[in-house]
Image (cartoon, rainbow, N blue to C red; front, side):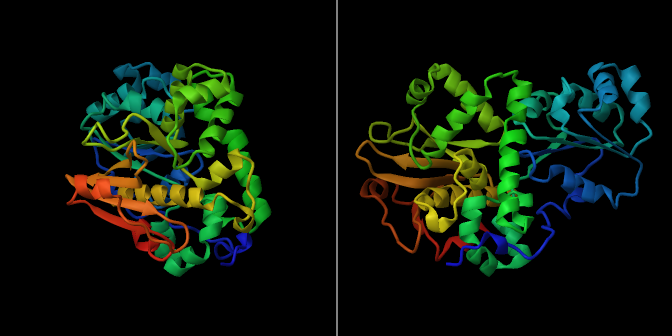
Length: 388
């Protein structure tokens, strides 16, 4: 397969996002549209493109605006309402930077029922925790990911994804990576993302000083894709307590860097349930963290990258199509295992991921324990429908 990072997409393309033509339907007076997602995936660009054609009276700002921050953090009706009652739409970017933002937005929603509000955030622990309870019944929530296979297929067709597959595994799917025209630009951007943006919310909002330990933790996780992770063993290797490891991993999940998958079980005597596996929100981020952006022909970790890619693309697909699915891995103490188990409305669908064109058979214990469940191998011959 051709492996040329300078040919990933047409020159300087504009990738149309899944929600590009849907924001108007999602915006309702008296509700807040909350857009979550990792840093640099295009949340602000998505909204700004919508606002470019918006004809109503608009106020747009961010959580870094000191005047706005002081005003909203006052929590005083008499101070807040006069400044916003004349607007049809409020856009608040990086809303997690405003303390108790949920209460402030509740005041606006309750007192100005005509007002539409968009709030974006790159850390769920900063935004969701403050918005969740105050805005129960008053919010629509969407997640924006790095570019998905759904978006690439819609714009460029399925064959383009197949041709560019190895580059997607190595460099990932961040918008600027996809649209960069050269290996040098992709590499430079990913290093900038790692050094300047990746841990910004974790370090600032949780007042953590030792970023080196978090990077070291991410490196250890990066080499264990598709394997169970022991928090105790991670702590020993890093010279920190198990509780600290668990705290850091939780923060990395809530800042959209890692995803935790737990073991599936309905038979506790045979099946492993208490351990976790972790995937990265983007394979390019994983690779730049370990300092390996070598082309696919010079790598020995393509099966792990393939597993990460398939899991994330599947999750993106379900999120965008609004499918309520729970994700697990499955393994027994006798070492029988399955990469992904999806549970949806009581139905079980199991998938084994194979790099290349190999097929797998369902473990005998799985077939006996869950005779109504489906089992499929996802490989390079059939992955497109699975992810898009």
